[in-house]
Image (tube, helix red, strand yellow):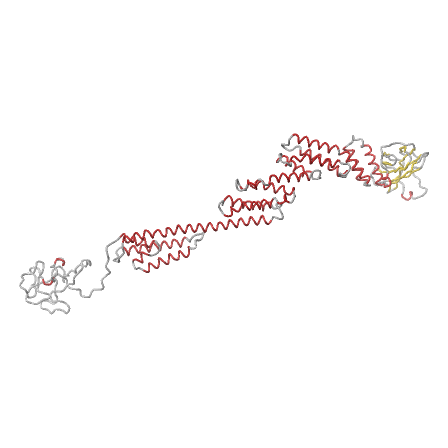
Length: 623
């Protein structure tokens, strides 16, 4: 078969090789093979079939002829020679043509023409779609893909903007990327052989430029998200700062004592803000908050409550260490120390000479140990001396009993404070001298305190204080008289009239008084008056207890003659003497003391008789 494109230019193919013109045999390759049946008569008029011209670009091959009964050769005409030609089919010429007959059915619409493969163009269209704007599909006039790209990108932007601190859900981003990849693949496939006018180089360049858009948008979104995260963090930090501020304000009135944990939690919050988020707005506000914190915690000092201010000020001393170096302004860090020294001094001096001596000892010792060079430390010795001098005053000072207590406490406090670590030797010596002064004044103040009790008719206190005096100061010259006061106080406690007499250390007299014991129990006889003393008489074995009714008889007379009694003879001066008889057995049969008042006059002898009535003690005098 020959290529139709080899025919003469501008000459119809059916003008060549046709019989009937006397042009000789047909060209080689046309007509029946040798030995086959002859074709139609030469003289028969024939019009060769018209074959539509074909474009080389269409590439449609000629349709081959099929032998009717197998094998190859010229097509068999079923009508035979001379048969009438069916309508629509051109009559065959005597020489058979090499062109196939037209199809029996009319052909369908031709397929869309396809251009040559252009990989760079397809890549550019795909990259344009990866930008998320669907421009690749727009250049291909594929409006559906263009719309899908815009809708997916718009939905992502609607969810993502404004930027949230937590970002976009991962599933949404993955879905958007999948859609872009599918659209890019589709655009690449369409753009590989499209015949539309899509310039390759500009498309590829635009794609590379636009591909940077989602990358830059991603970076900008991350920056916006970081800003949103920063804003949220700033709000959280400011909330923490506000909570700490409210805690400090809540206990501003009640003070630090009893709320230590609350103030510590607020300080911990301040420290966390300054240490963990130093560049935050909340951290920049912490120094101002610390000033409020110091002012609130140290409020007792401003009110003059020095004892209450000690613990808060000690806490404030630890704040710079808790907050960390450089996080507390220098003036605040130095604020508590001088105020603590003042508070230790004020609280310690306030406790000098008081019953709670530990207050002064603790605070003054702490002052001398922690702030030995402070002005307050230099005032300790003069202040102790001042208190000792005041307690030693006879007039214009404390009462004798208060002075006694103060001097004893001052002596103990001065001795204790002098033992503080690191106290200079001069301070130790000065405190020792004040302790000695206080101790030296104790006997007189103790004596005067006991005398005040006797003058105030507090005979029980007189006995206690005089006994304490003799126990403490047995070698003091007033110790014997103190024992006389103990006796006189016992008599006056049962016989108040005896309290008018002030005991003396005098003894003896010119008048004889014999005291007998007409009782089976031992008795102690105490007496006071011009002279004061006491003695004991043993029980009378031959004596008995009298009935109470017997003592009511006017003729009743104890210590009858003719019997020997335990007795004691006294020599007393003239005057009124008060006797007290106290049973010694403690059996309770005659346990009540008995009293007697004897007016002793010169020229007489007296007999004092002690006896016991059942249920009562009693005594009598036989002058």
